[in-house]
Length: 161
Length: 67
Image (cartoon, rainbow over all chains, first blue to last red; front, side, top):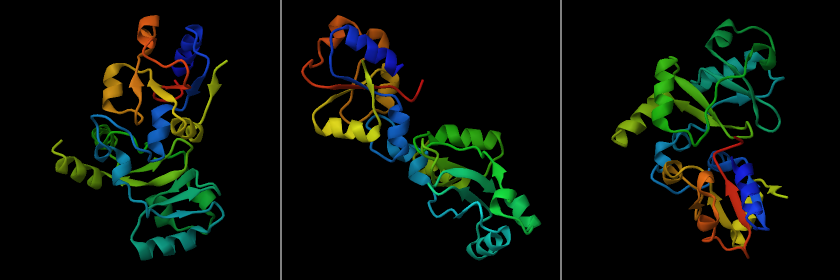
């Protein structure tokens, strides 16, 4: 839509027109402030657990399982060197505890949400899909953290929604 | 020719006094918009509406994402 708007402005005689094509989804996903009727507390980004475990593709699953056992987490995100989510190690892989790499153990392409996503919509989706957690990523694919259904529901109750 | 820019470039242009224009419908603008942005929906980009914009300053347009 914005390329068309930029073109239209140029046709109306404007000479210095720039198109921020990634838009407000990109802006919000980097935690930059937005103004409006929907405050940031109603968005996923405000309730993310940023201490969710992560590992590199070459890390060994057995080592990861040991770390998870100590921390109490039941999931681990596999990130590349830029912090982009490659996959997720879930409960099934952790229980199996095979002597493989994180890359071999991970599930590819986990569902994600943006920090600017509305909590109400996320909670509805998590209930429908029977999800207890959802990773939150920026528009460039980097991990922000993990949103739990419990945290999201509590936040909505606090907000009176 | 329009220049497509990234987030950092938008921030620099805001600091330099650019006008930020959200071209989504009004309801979406009211929900959330970039700080200081004005709303001129794409369907209303006519000579009358854009007369409110300053031709001497850069204009950054945006919508939700790459749509």
